[in-house]
Length: 170
Image (tube, rainbow, N blue to C red; front, side, top):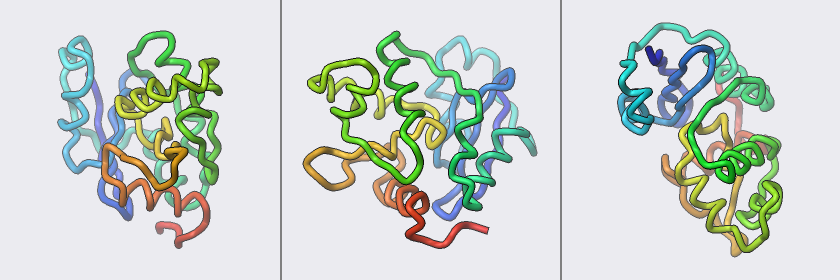
């Protein structure tokens, strides 16, 4: 069974979905089913149960929102992908809060050539576990924020929160 919980944030609810102690999806939506339908058919077959408390994952989300910007790093995550995609996700988790990288830099951190920037962008677009796998910390080399699955205002808020540019959530 996939267990889900909603955690309130200043930019809207954060849906957390976990299985056997690992996050399998997380995203800024008030409807956990929106994240659930993005899971593999095998995981969807397990069903979805909304719970009051996921434990460590929800505690980490609340700590992050309260200013412990490294709190998300300790949470186990699991998402599908090719070996290259998994390397890109691992490299994303190494990008520290308060810093950003370009898509080309992310590719290099994953052991790929800079020219694999599109592969890095595709991994970010397919990321199921935001902000625990922090694709919001990747910016286009040409400037600006680029896109974000949950909207650029959410990405801007996350980056401002991590840089200390806004007041922490209570």
